[in-house]
Length: 108
Image (cartoon, rainbow, N blue to C red):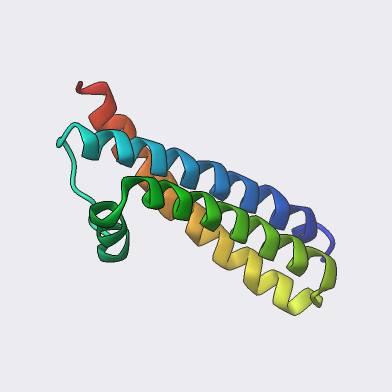
C-alpha cells in the first residue's frame, strides 16, 4: 500500500522532534528539581552527565530517522506496514509525554 510509505518518514520526523523536545524539557525540569526521570537508563545518563543525556536523546532522534529512511527505501510492503504501526504507537506514547511536559511547564 503506497499510502503508508510516506507515513514512515512523517511519523519518524514527528517522533524525532518530540524526542528532542522531551530531552530539553526533561533537562530543564531536572535542573530545577521539579520532575524526576522515570526511565532508569536515562536517569543513569542524567546522573552521570547531563550533557551526555542530551547527546543520547539527539542520537536517538537521528537513529529513528535514519532507520525509518532505510525501511522506507529498502523494505518490503509487509515490513513497512508493521514498522509504520510501531511508529504510530511510539508517536502516541511521545504525545502523552509531550502532554505531561506541557502540563508541568504551564504550572511554573
